[in-house]
Amino acid sequence: MEMTFDEFVLHAVKAHHACRGELRYGQVVFNELHTIRPDIAETLRDTANDPFYKRVVSDETWRVIHNNWGDTE
Image (cartoon, rainbow, N blue to C red; front, side, top):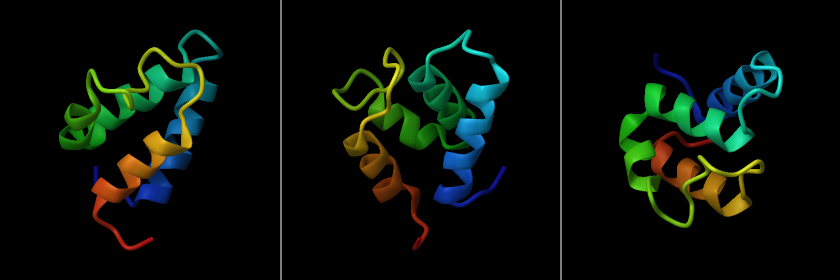
């Protein structure tokens, strides 16, 4: 599935909403990132920017994802 960074952000928000609070937002973001851009997910895994165990995804984590995404948005 090819998408822009902005499309991914919207996709992650919708995926989190669909799980009705059963998963943390960071967990959903990481899981969706791993599905769509596993290369970026692996660079985040076990780092300070790994969102998996967080309820809120930090601006720095979004910046890292965006910087590695490769589109010009």
